[in-house]
Image (cartoon, rainbow over all chains, first blue to last red; front, side, top):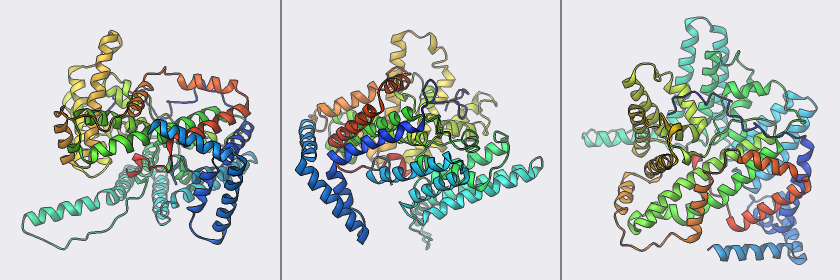
Length: 93
Length: 472
């Protein structure tokens, strides 16, 4: 246990020398990142929706996610992500 | 609900805009209520019945706070604090130690030939109970000591104890540091977006890649049956566990701090490159800092700290660390883990080890880092092993150098090396990364985050294992 007193509550500020910003920079960053996940990892969305507890609403969610995944497979990005996953997986395991 | 999952992402995508919309429109009470509601939803996701327990803890500490205000300056004030601490610890003790106590009593009575029908209960350990109990104690003790000027309204106490980023696995936020942040709504013109995003991405990487791979491919197998493996596998399993527990636990803290930052709130740092410590006292200034400083301020110092002479200081160190060990669970292995740390801290103090470390030459510092790291690793064996029998099997296995390595692969070795290398990066790495972040346009940051998450997803594979500290 530390017996020195250099850890007084609230003194270890991670924000020191960090630059704050306006909140408005956050939505576009999150929107782009989210869009990339939806487009390339549509399989993850479909899998998540299939694991939801059974209900009428969740059935619609699963249908929509499945439709989206099929579309992404047809258009190509989902296949590209699967190829990346396979390549990295084989390399590592 | 755990952090690096789609469930949490969707939850955050709903909560974040609502919380900010209410903060921006200066609907401060509604902003707090929205975050409290979200926090209870987050907690009820595990077991909705336990949300009542969380509220019970809040109500207890809120009432104690009001009583402390009313009785300030009278002998009753101290009695209220003592009663509130006892009630908090009783709640924690019941859920954490009741089963162990009854089992031990049953064994003892059997051994004495006095078998009795004991009230065995199936008790579910509420996730995060240790953390919210400690925060409740922090609130009443800070109030009593005057670190907080007055008790706070129920809504603030609820927010402080239940705030979802720190609710289930810390960091243990201190009342005196956090509650003043609730006096005004967070400002949308001063949000540490870079800090939040960097910490979240770094945490997701450490958890999903480093901690998970090491756990599944090496640590779990070696600790499950140490007799099946030779010394090299077992030795690296211990190193791997040291890296795994750091990457797992610090990842949770990083994501928690990042999520809070994106909502406009500040938490203190919880880890600071612990395996580069040159003394064990230094290690505890860098590891789970919010717990070690909590134990110091609310246990070690009230026990007398280093004010009663050398022997009492050693006793207090040992007692604090043993109690810190038992806090992790009712088991001999945790008690031994705490006693080892407490004993070494006392020894360090007795021989003055590291007192002049600032003047040490580089080779001596390197040697000290190696010594402390290996001592910490030795203690981790007790912490990780299922029971003491497994500990002895691990220790015996270190003598068997004849067996070939079957678990260790170049990839796992690289992960261990990576986990150690990040202990020695410059202390201002976060600030440097923030400066890089600010050079990029927003769209590039979005693309970078998207690509990083896809790569992590591709490498990390399906599912997310629970964080180690959820069980405490």
